[in-house]
Image (tube, rainbow, N blue to C red; front, side):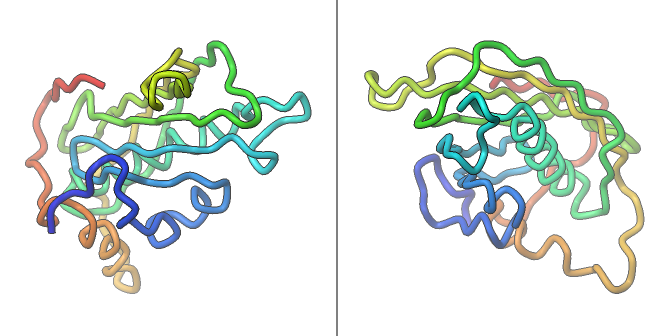
Length: 176
């Protein structure tokens, strides 16, 4: 199966990540080198001042990076060990946020992923508007998968490009 394209409604976010689904995030692109999706900013993901909660941006960042690292590790277990996120101008209630995650480093024992979030510009047919956050996520990778969780990557395999994953390398250069 080919990777789902942006705007595709073929990906069941709940099947991939129930917490992302619970806040309203919709995954649109799944591959070992790019994960992307959109989040309508609703009451469910706002802080009391009616702007996107920074913890939701962190959740999105770690979730997308973890899925990507899992695929890039050929579906071995991964574990996030560091998340650093900077927040810029906020997205308000009613906005739509685009998130994209790409690998910066794909090593044998660690991976680093960069995740950027933008507010969508509704006047430009939902093109990227101002960037609202940027995160770096460091993960341990190639950890053993417990016997009772060998099927943990099945949903990702279902939506990823041919279920394929790149071999680990010392660096990866991708543009968001």
